[in-house]
Length: 398
Length: 145
Image 1 (cartoon, one colour):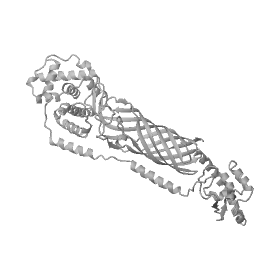
Image 2 (cartoon, rainbow over the protein chains, first blue to last red):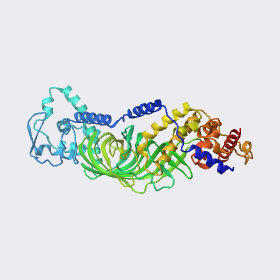
Image 3 (cartoon, rainbow over the protein chains, first blue to last red):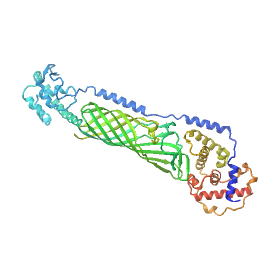
Image 4 (cartoon, rainbow over the protein chains, first blue to last red):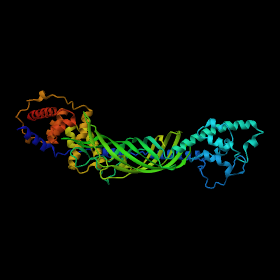
């Protein structure tokens, strides 16, 4: 008897043999399956939404004292009130103020009367040479208001001195605001940002849709992916440019790298071998081009609150599968061939550290549109995602 | 499947553990079967893989290259198996060393190639051939007694 005959005889004896199984095995199977069912996916995006909402409410409370924009030409220029006297002031007497505000300025209500007072003070040019000369020059030509604060303040010399000091500070503030206002109109900003996306720890891939990665036609690849997967925290990094079309409107674009990770169980079909139900780590590397339109509905010297809407096209640079195997792990790579489209809608806030540098937070909801060859990821389990993009905005030119 | 587990594990207690774990894997991953290949083949591979994982844990596979040990030991003399029943043959297989028994089961009964066995067990194809040869000889010796 040769080897082949021996093998065939052994196989015939063993292949279709049956063995009785004790009841405790089936009980163990049932208990094991019950344990598996108790896995509950934990979602973090709800917490992140609550934090973002609380932050937004806090910001609105803080920004409540903000005053309307001062226009170079008043829509109803005939009169406005002098806060110091409570009297109505004719337009002609406040003409110098218009020189101070050639651009749109958003400032607190207390600035206006103090600015009027400053117009009568000779100390202003020392503080703000680039803004104040016109004010001082015109102010020296004649009285600005009928209710001159000095007349009332004359008996209180000490109060007048204190007022001077305040005026210096206010004019510095005014200069800062003017610079910021200039930057927000027709300027260009460089953005550097990171995107901390929320993640659920586990999920179940839809069984109703068949995603293309990996293709079942592929000779080598991942097959029979388990529908239950664990997701890593997705993150993005990027740079961009934002063009201010007007004080209200801006458009932004750039490049953004995104990393998506997950662990799963699946079969790996290799070149001449097959690994069933093996642990696999999957990391996807995406490069995207986002385009967003911004509308600034609050814009002060320190704060900017805006809404934005836009879309993004992303390309899959590498879909890397690490198949755990003994003694050496197997690396399997795929590339995407079609862009992943998404749309976003959000609210954002920026804190301006200087006229040239701001830090911003843009929470948004982003929807990823399904495509025929969309690789499986967190985006296929949860196409509507809550993102929180944070970054720095550098003003680089007007 | 119990017979399969018994062939790999060599004793009923371990075989039942593997069977239980294999069925849990099978039922929980049943959605992932997309019809590529026969279901029976897919299921059998899950049980084989489960058995292999157990054997790896107990380090029963001690797979080193020992080609010289087995080379040339095979003889053409063989005891006729026709006289032997399933239970007797199973007892002999259970008596094989775990590493040789595993390779024998994978190659002779499940139909794995040496390349696949080498990949699964993390050894060379030569080692797989050596283990198989040794298992055959040992079985033939035992059958002849």
